[in-house]
Amino acid sequence: MISSLWSDIVALTRRNMLILKRTPDVFIFSTIQPIIFVVLFNAVFGGSITPAGFDSYLDFLVPGVMIQTIMFASINTGVALAQDLESGSLDRFRSLPISRLSILVGRTNADSVRSLVVNAVVIVSGLVLGMSTDGGILGIIAGLGLAVLFANSIQWGFAFMALQLKSVQSVQAGAFLPTFPLVFAASTFAPVENMPTWIQVFAERQPVTVTINAIRGFFYGGDVLEASGVSLGTSVLYSLLWIFGLFVFFAALSVRKFNQN
Image: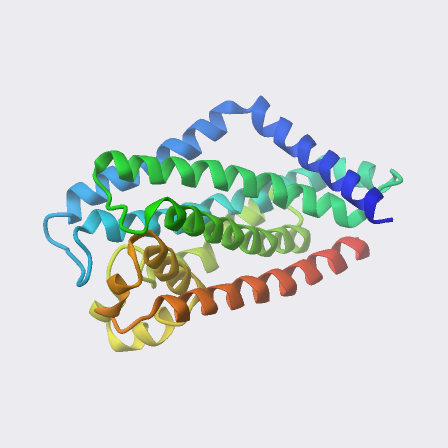
């Protein structure tokens, strides 16, 4: 039973990876975009913003761009799933002797691999521009790993949205409603303590902020967070709790909705 599920997941993950391989323009553009964000935001804000505890704005920026990229790229999970619904591909999969769970897992796995590659490119671009490496290679690997886990949990949220809305246009329009406040009412591009008090209440506790803080701690050492009254251990704990909670909640809803369709 478990071996059959595993083989189904591997096969469908490979299928979705092949689709990405056959549309290289999509992958290339999704890789170039975050590099542009790193270069442009560092050039525009680097001379005027140096958050407390950081050597440069670039150090503060790179983890933020990583999570921003994940949030916007994860919308493609919902769009791709909606395309499969509209084209009838999912109906054909349902007729095959494979696990229904593997259909959804294969989709999110493939997109998680893409997030891994794209975020690795973002890190390399930051290093080329002069990003600090106080956390060493292990810190970078830990931060990248946490980012991929976060990406997978968010992708399940958009998968559920696709199963609920069932059309590409609806997913594209609806996905930005949760994405924008999560990305911009966070420590993505500016310190939370500089925001109005009513925004800080939300920004300090939401999953994007705590995950970005954890990645910054991994990359540069936990002392960079102390100036903002944040600890690495707390940020990692809250991030993992958010990741686990989002994954369990949306995976359960997605599987249930998929079985009902």
